[in-house]
Length: 231
Image 1: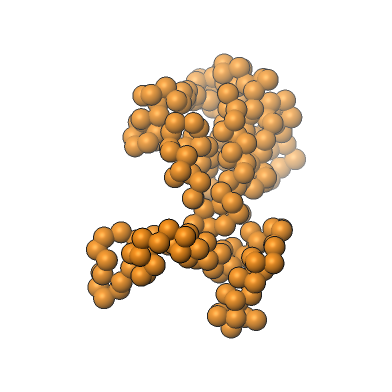
Image 2 (image 1 turned 45 degrees about the horizontal axis):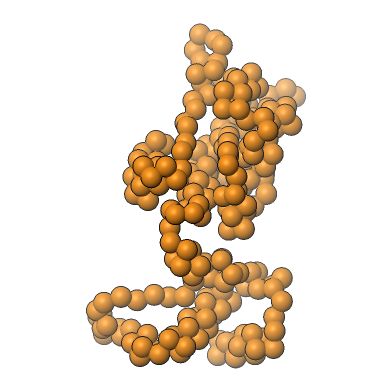
């Protein structure tokens, strides 16, 4: 897990002191011979559950009480870009990674402020989910990535990102759209907006369902639906 913090944009953010982190091994806080941190479930059932004592000690070691404590779990609230922006505003963020069947509910009741899921599927451990959350959050911190780059990404205004092209202008008989070579910035922006809307309608129409649509946007959506034979 440490490798993530030692490469690419994250490594530069750490070097520039825009981000600081501490990795804590819960097994270091176990008080038994084999550093065991799990046990059978009360009431029966398959799998093992992480026990409360080492978890509490590990959380206390990073002053978790009074801080935002996120527990990664498939049973949590679905993570999205707005949630990432919310967490990016925190001075101190503690991320708790579950294993096996999860963690004892009493730890959740005592320490956890947010239970977060990164999607409707189950992973073997919370570390993978935690890295996804960290990657989405740290890049929103001031100075990590330019503001202009962030403004045009997917989800920033409720739409997916437009298709992008680079040199050569023709690749394997496929040509870059003429509008992008025109130098006409207003036409380029209009094309990009239409493509964002088109992609959102195709892959994530749910992003538009709760969105207030003015007449111009409604007209554009209707045109796209006609083009696709859905109107």
